[in-house]
Length: 291
Ligand code: SF4
Image 1 (cartoon, rainbow, N blue to C red):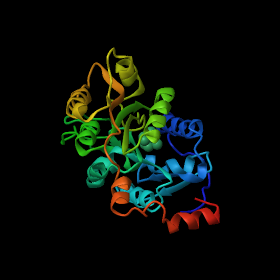
Image 2: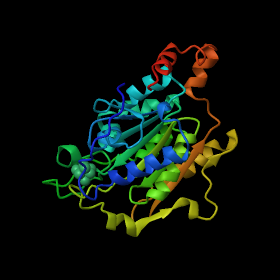
Image 3: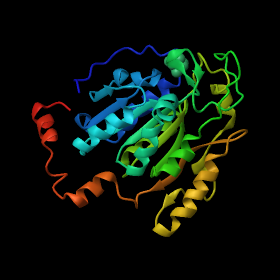
């Protein structure tokens, strides 16, 4: 890891990435996290530039396409005291990185994954990404999308993610609170962020989302928290059903939260009790004074 240097953003005007970046920085600041203990890991795509544009003195690693979760896993397991946040696109995580996305859920490592979900591969001129539904044609496509889409929330719930939420890039205040909850959560957290790409996706625009989005926390009786083991199946079923709602109304907020399951770090510690106390890599990082 190299010491962080701030660069000027080259995202397109109106890109939802700005809202995600702003919410993330505010969340880290408001949580009072030690910047030396925060690492942002990104994949390839427009979202991959997020660590470069952070205005906080934290470390970032811009990794390979689809491999952000693998890099993040190595960073977290070699230094469990770090807060690790992954910023990646829907194409990165649900296309080439889908294997890592699914199997990370099985481990329940204590990290936060933020997917910048815009339905296109923005960095390479707007090809259809895995969240664009079958038959849709954005302005960047010569013909309608020939593949069916993936539902990130449903896949995450089924894979074992223990915090699953959806945010909206233009509702920065709400997204900030979601990110704070995700970072504070014990276990693997996903926030799928609806992120308009005004350059290539003329279907899922700010105007489209503004008319449809509603907050789950404002729904009477909504409670995504698993407080005892016997509730798990029921809460999963409710979250899965809610994750399918898409059309005139689109929910954002927390769909599922379960802190009863052990993390991968806890499972390692159970087998090797000295794991968390014997971290030479962490000691070296601390001694050098830079994360
Ligand atoms: Fe944002 Fe789309 Fe431009 Fe990429 S191409 S920076 S996702 S607006």
